[in-house]
Length: 90
Image 1 (cartoon, rainbow, N blue to C red):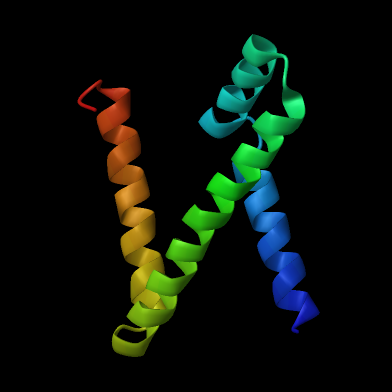
Image 2 (tube, rainbow, N blue to C red; image 1 turned 180 degrees about the vertical axis):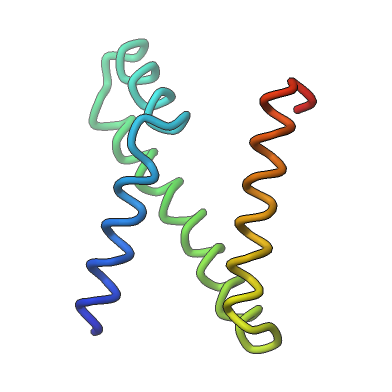
């Protein structure tokens, strides 16, 4: 296991996910249901599946496309989606 990659990935995901919509859903569900453990387990499993799919797609794409291109396309899409959200198009 490459501990530097693990630490970098953990740090990036941890900071990127702070106070996003997913966290707000978790807070709301825990408050609404009074079952924080069930909400936590559901959140962990949901995020594990999404992350697993993302990693598999990334690994497959890396065989055909340079990782830098994937990063630039991802950044571009992130900006476009942000602009569309800003102007209430999505």
